[in-house]
Image (cartoon, rainbow over all chains, first blue to last red; front, side, top):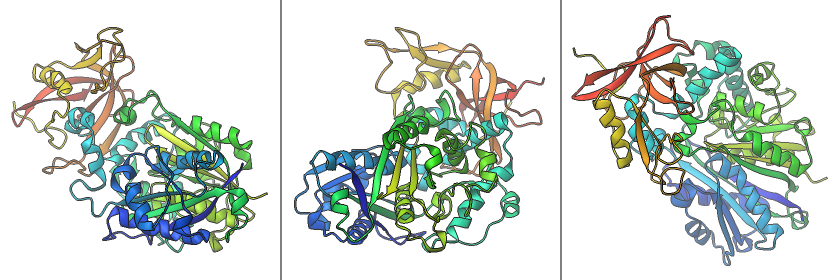
Amino acid sequence: MAVAIVGVGETDYAWKDPRPVPALALDACRRAIADAGLTPAEVDGFVTEAHSMVTRAPVDEIATRLGVRDRRYTAAIGLAGSGTVGAALLARQAIESGLAEVVVVYYAINLSLRGAGGAYGYHAGDPAKVAFEMPMGYYGQPVYFAQAAQRYCHEFGATPEQFGAVAVAARQHAMRTPNALRREPLTIEQYVAQPWLTEPLRKLDCCLVNDGGAAYVFTSLERARHLRRPPVVVAGVGMGCKPVTQAQYFSQSADLLTTAAVASGKRAFDDAGLTPADVDVAEIYDCFTISMLLQLEDLGFAAKGEGAAFAASGAIAPGGSLPVNTHGGLLSQSYTVGANHVVEAVRQLRGERGEAQVDGAEVALVAGLGAPEHATMLLTVDR
Amino acid sequence: MSEVLAVPFFEPRFEVELARPFWEGIAAHELRMSRCSVCHGWQWYPDDAGPCCDGAVYEWVPVAHEGELHTFSRVHRQFLPGPAGPLPFVVGFVHLDGVVGPRFVAPIVDGPEMRIGARVRARFIEVEGHTRPVFDVVPS
C-alpha cells in the first residue's frame, strides 16, 4: 500500500511569537488538517520528533486540543531534522499495517521565549559539554560547525565565495517565498564583506533564530486520491546514524566531514527505486552552509569535496540543475528544523509555488540532520 | 606569573562526577583521558552508561602533552554564558601523540603559525584560582 502526504501547514513565521511551543504546534496542525480537507476527528495517529517534541509539545496536549476522538497510534522518532523528516518512516508503516489511517506529524520551536542561553542553551544541558568542552571555550553551534568547515577548507580548498554561494542561493529562493523571514537581496560581495563570526563562518552561514511550527498529514494513497489536494507520494524513506553519542558528535566523530546521510540517502533511494539523477528539487537541512555542502556530497549529488564547487556553479540556485531549498531553508526562510523542508517539497510537487516553482518537478528529496542521526525522504507526484 | 586565559572563563561543573579525575589531572599539570578497564579502548567522553565492556570501569590514564592540530576556529563572538572574555580566541581539536581516535578540545594560543597540521604543546596557566591547559603552536 502506498502512502501519501495530503496536507501541510505552517504557522506565520516570526522573529518573536509570544505563543509557547504547544500553541505553535496546535496552530500548524490545524492548518495542515484543514489543508487536507479533513477534520481532527478523522485523525487517529501521531508521530513526532523524539527529543524536543516529546517534552515541549506532548502529543496528548496537542491531540486533545485539536479534538482528536480516537487516537490509536502514537510514536516518536529521531533527533531534530532526523525526526521531522524520519517521522515519515513510522507514519507510513502505521498506515500500511493498519495501525492508523490518518497520521499527523508536527514540530514547533520558540527560541525567543527560551530565556537564558537562547538557542545555545540546549547544549549547556549536556554534562560532557559542561565538563570537558565549555571550560575550553568550545561552545555554541556556530563554533561546532566552524571546526568542520575549517577542516573542509583545509582538505578540499573551499573558498569563502563557495560558502557564500550557499547563503546567496538560499536568499534568492527566499525572495520568491512570501513567508520567508529574510527576503532582502544578498550578493556574494555582501557575503564576503560580512565580518567573521567564528572562522571560517560568518553570520550568513548560520540558520535564522526564530519561532514557528509546521505539520503534515499522511494517509493511504487510495484515500488521498479522494481528498482535495493532489497526493504527494512517499516513495522512499531511510534513516542512518553515526556510531557516536550526541555529546561526542561534533568533536569526536571519526570523520568530521561525513554525515549519516550516506546511509539514510542510500536507504531512501533503494526504497524508492530512484537515484540522485532522478531528483528534480531537493530540500536539505541547512543549519549551516557547511552542513548542506556535506549532505550534498553524502547524498550523491556531488563527489566528496566537490559540494562547494557544485554549489558555486549555480546548480542549487533558482533555475539551476538541482534547485536546493526552494523556500530559503533554515538560512533564509525559518528555523523550523526541517519540518519546513517537508512542507516545501510537498508544495513543489503540487505545483503551488508560484515564482519559486521548479518547472515539471516530479521527484523531491528531503534531508534532515540531527547530530549523529540523519533521515532522507523521497517524494513523488502520483504517477 | 599571571596570564590571561585565552578563552572566556567558564568553570567546569560536574553534572557527572565522572569528569572529576580529568580536572584533578589538570590541577596536577597532567592531561588524562578515560578508557575501558577491560579492553583499554578509549571512552571519550565518559558518560553514565559506563565503558563498553561488561563489568568494566573507566580508568584515567596520563596522555601526551603534544600532538597535532586537527582543526580550529578563531572565535569572534562570545557564545559562553558568563562574563565577557577576550575576543577573538582560538579553540581547536588536538590529536595527542599516542591517542588514536579521541580528540582533545582545547584553547590554542593564537599566532602567525596557526594552521591545521601544526604541532602543538600543552602548558598550564592559573586563572582565577583554577588551573587551565592551553596549547602553544610549536614553531616549525
